[in-house]
Image 1 (cartoon, rainbow, N blue to C red):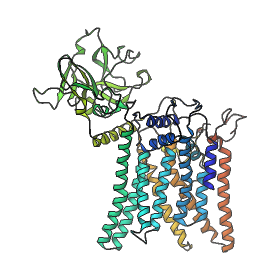
Image 2: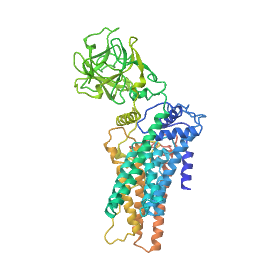
Image 3: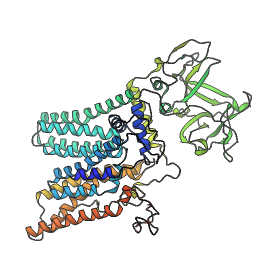
Image 4: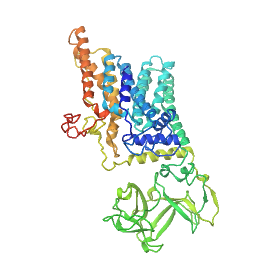
Length: 606
């Protein structure tokens, strides 16, 4: 009943147009339906599920998802939203079941359900075509599977034991295949498993320990890795048509994409005088050496473009000031001595021919001695956020300064099939992860984009429209005071809270080390652990405090207090529900606003 109510609230909030990130992930669902290759910084499972939900519900992949607020019209988009809403609903139910399994306390389980049901942030995330409800579902399923597996510890290798151990492995695969945040869950499960094996090693014979070790290695390592690899194989098999993600990958990878200029292409294998070529930077996700008609803006070195002769001079580059600026100069091939470059074939033997794709080239500026270099840094808006190209006076060999010939035309040379350069699946798998890691770490905020830092998340320091209001979630622990009696189930609750606190740390602290742009929604996996801890802690505290009175009165006090906490959560939702469902009119600090007087901190914006 609780799950159905939450799902109904989700559906009631469905908007008729895509907001913010839904344009991003809805478009990716369309790419799967159209089998068009794209690139994203996250693993593919979440987007594959979105595309599958759209396909089976009649969506044809035609909606452009080009900008927020663009009305859907007659597009069959509800299937994708309903899938995300269903998984968001199941996350609430799984939170209830996990606490019930860990503590055997119905009040604690009901309280965590209330905390999650009345959370406007979780409600908002689950309304739209996003990866977050899918990720949260897999995290909570893994937690529930682990809890059920722990209940089977007295019957090892039984059918129940194998079922929940394998279920944990499958849901680990699900979490880490939706977002890389899922690997925090892998760490949590690994620590818990290592602790269990340590206890088994002390109690049982070595042969039995090896059986336990092998079973866990099979279900928690080999099974998730196999499924994870298979997920990428399906991903690359579906996305067989050329798309806007081609350029992030190597020339060899692009050759297998239908419609790409390199697909079924034939070209001369070796470069000669008179060849016309394109050059691609060898840094993973590197760009092509290309040009624009427009000039560098006033105040950024010389007012030269990036077309005509490849040119460098003694002026600092726009972003990397220690490097020299690279521009285009001259007319009809006529320029000056700063247009002269020496081509160095790295690792080649004297007399060895220069190969397309395979040969690694460096371009050394003749007068200054610097080397042509590409960066992960992107130019400002005046440069269309293209990758910066400079001339690096520090000539240390690196992938940033290496280039390869990709496309190649020369009528005087024989052609060969480009299939000769196709990489294996393992090479594509490794390359895709390097590209995702580099692109993820390099994500920067766009102009006028609202971001946040990890320290702000638990404090709700920054709240904007469509974001969350956490009221009662707390990260406290109860300690057994001398002379106080705590029943066995209470100690069980404290131990469960201890493990959940470790899960919260593992899903929260790593964000402090990240240099990439961060948003409020990155806290939601940790928030799930926080909610479970809160419910268990309040339950133990109230039982502990009510133990000072008679048992009948204690039960009444405990029930009343838990009901009051749930009612406060419900009232909080009543006050702030427009953040999830939307509102019209002025901002909250202006008279006549729907939420007038509810902007409790100056840092809140709604």
